[in-house]
Amino acid sequence: MKPQSVPSYSQGAQDKALLAMTIGQAFDRTAARYPDGEALVVCHQQQRYTWAQLARAVDLHARALMALGLQVGDRLGVWAPNCAQWFISQFASAKIGVVLVNINPAYRLSELEYVLKQSGCQWLVSAGSFKTSNYHAMLQELVPELAGQPAGALDCARFAELRGVISLDPEPPAGFLPWAQLATLGGEVTDEQLQVREACVQFDQAVNIQYTSGTTGFPKGATLSHHNILNNGYMVGESLGLTASDRLVIPVPLYHCFGMVMGNLGCVTHGTTMIYPGEAFDPGLTLQAVAQERATGLYGVPTMFIAMLDHPRRAEFDLSSLRTGIMAGATCPIEVMRRVISEMHMGEVQIAYGMTETSPVSIQTGPADDLELRVTTVGRTQPQLENKLIDAEGNVVARGEIGELCTRGYSVMLGYWNNSQATADAIDGEGWMHTGDLAQMDEQGYVRIVGRNKDMIIRGGENIYPRELEEFFFTHPAVADVQIVGVPDAKYGEEIVAWIKFHPGHAANELELQTWCKSRIAHFKTPRYFKFVDAFPMTVTGKIQKFKMREISIQELEAREPKAMPST
Ligand code: AMP
Image 1 (tube, rainbow, N blue to C red):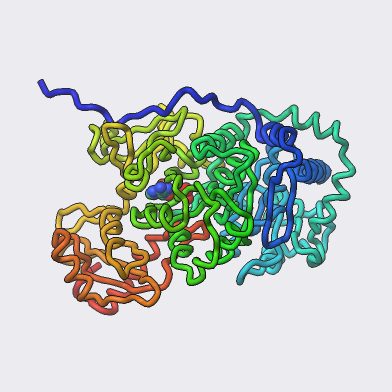
Image 2 (cartoon, helix red, strand yellow):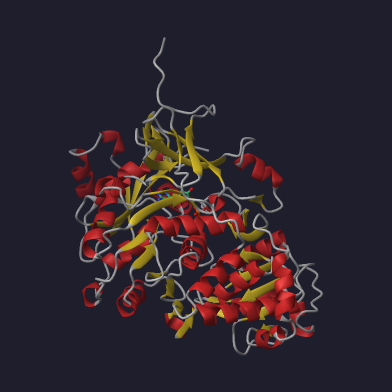
């Protein structure tokens, strides 16, 4: 008889109880506990709030949203870069049972139209403009009725449910409701009315719709409950050991769960100060915020940490107050982790792994994990969750074998908004969310992410995991960042393309890199093609869009080496 192998299944710790409350209740609890503690610092708006001040602002705006007619279950879109109003909208809507719809600040007309329609937003909070996007102009084009009708009484052909747009611009065009007017509207609803409303809100109700980044396919609205995201923020903060003395710099976008769950809710559940360094990520502004605010924690996706490490003025900023933080959202290269620990004083930095659909974090390294585990794995299953790895037939694989990662527990989303087919495809009958990520679990339950299902390159029958190759290129002294993609090839089925970003002042050519590879890795893993770039195509959350890189590489190769490409 074959000996029984240990299955790749693990359950997180059970000793930490989940919070049985709504987001509004958790926020009020912290505000009551630390009224004079600093809650929020928004560097680019020169705004500071204590918890008591923030609670007053949240309550006022919750009452204003009620005055606008928003009911439990209605949707409020937010289309803006990081700012104080983003935070206030998040917590004001949660208090009154309204579902916040996060709209990617980089979206343009067609994407905005899609999410507004798909989610059926009743109201939208919009910035005036951001970077090269003129939000007002786009809204005027999509909703021409805005100019001719009073805000709040919109009758719009394209968006049947939309009643109005609140603008963060102090002087918006006709038809937009200025944010400042919410303060007056808030006076129309009493504290008692707000309390009555809050009592109707249950923690299992939907509180948030987040459209998945679009690294693959069409955006789907992951619908998350109070219970999902409040507890995930709480568990992430617990793992970091956050307290009311901590000060966390949040340069990641609020529209993504990294900002609004791991950042805002992680801090709100622990009384930790939130510091937004800028509207969007900027390495210099982030380093400056850490130094000026004496921050103890810092979040970022790997590319953000690389940009901070390579910043020409990094030495001017005193980062010695830092102790912890999280690197997550994409593969965290070992070399980058090591440098963050040694050069940015983040001795307790942790890696987190997750996806929007699981609120997001399901696996995280812990404070007790030794350095090697913290830099080479994404950690172990988070408290109160389960993870397993399965093969193509759905069977659990043995420890050490590669399988698709599946997650079950409190953090799994309610489903995709108005898309029962996609929900059924993602969450099976036993409640497992199928992540599409490939992973390995060791004897102690530590997980290594080896790539996405679709990422795997098969060249001449050999499986190549981009993650492994990327780690390898990070050991080259000239390489600052690297992404590996596969392109179709007439002879081998697929060939490898390495997109490489060099450290400032460094370079290497294709031949030098291939020669360097040859003595160090198996021949079939040596990239046939290289592309040298200053930046990778990315979503605003810093997620690399490999499908775009693949498309670009294919186009370029078709022009350069048509014979290598398979005939169609
Ligand atoms: P999103 O839903 O936008 O947060 O994207 C989730 C995806 O990001 C996951 O399915 C993974 O492919 C990737 N991801 C997140 N965290 C990590 C990590 N620590 N290591 C590798 N990949 C990650």
